[in-house]
Length: 219
Image (tube, rainbow, N blue to C red):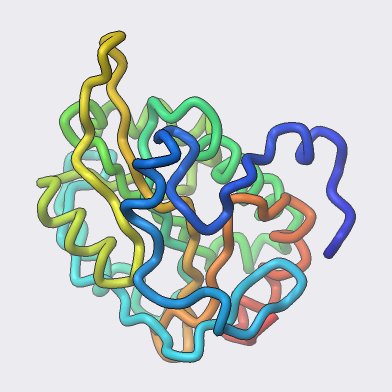
């Protein structure tokens, strides 16, 4: 494994292949990826999927309140897709931040090619306006934020093996959104998802892998 910076190491949450740490242990067990991670080929930072995932057939609403057809708008472009929510206390902002840090190290032409899509798992609170406010601070202004009906979002996540459950209110009044914490990278050559990254992926990991992912290569 690559060395991780002290800051990244301190912030990383251990359960890289289960639900985000926004959930309890029992809840985390409920929505792991629907494929056997252990059976897949590994690189230093990622899992290479033997059976590539088809990009979700999702038509949602972007941060400008406009219709966004995910397949149509990202066709032929290197695309990273992540399901999370803006009230997530740790994993979601860390994931977006690490990708943003790595993106800034790319040549301008590659930065323009890369599509980073954040799909909310908490659409009731994560309106277009909320996503528009949160994404630039948590990640990068270029990141695409999408919201819409929860059943459609859940179906889209499950189509690529990411488990998410409806947000629920805890006894203390906090709302928890349980979601798989993986990022899937889709190739610009085939629009298929071949590479999966867990929540322990650092900015250095992304910086090393993004140039290859942008070209449609396996890291």
